[in-house]
Image 1 (tube, rainbow, N blue to C red):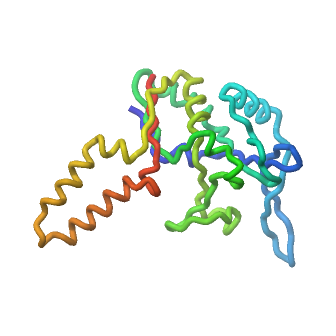
Image 2 (image 1 turned 135 degrees about the horizontal axis):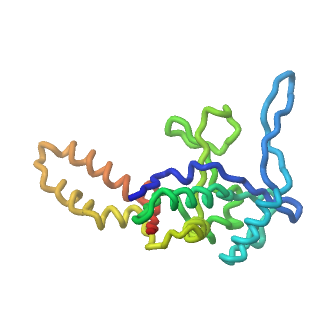
Image 3 (image 1 turned 90 degrees about the vertical axis):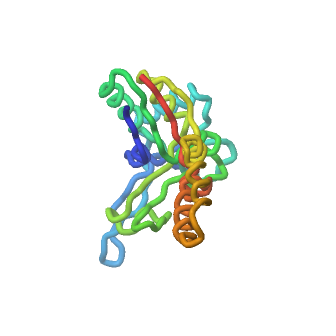
Length: 220
């Protein structure tokens, strides 16, 4: 059994930027300002390999990148490391299941004009920030995954899709509903403890929080 729990969203990815009717790679430049060096975003031409991969996947999955009606500066993430990871994973296991648990959304939500800055975020000490260049090296940078491109990369390397479900539904099916019910049987003297445990359980199910995690299953 192989489990990738909040792992694939931590792999390196490309950030694509749409400007003047053209897609660019977002890069980083070092500039001097007021006698001090700082980093800033820059835009680079797509490499031939990256351009070919985007065109191939977009054609196979009928995904338009960028989507219609986007404005200058629209950006999204491209998880170019998924293909290599699923290839290595396929070599590591001859027969068995692979469970991917992560923040994953459908392509129509992932590549959308209503999401002009993609899903990329920086995290540090339970604090989230959209300032990706703030204190470089001290913040974890992560981005959601696209369900269709994830599945495409897996299938390409021999992983068979078995289905997907949101974490809230998965945990309730696995018995978390019974645990919630058992809390009602605790005596009033343990009310405070019961409320704390209930809050912890609900945090795993809340669709606005961890309940939005997707459990995606493959097998080989």
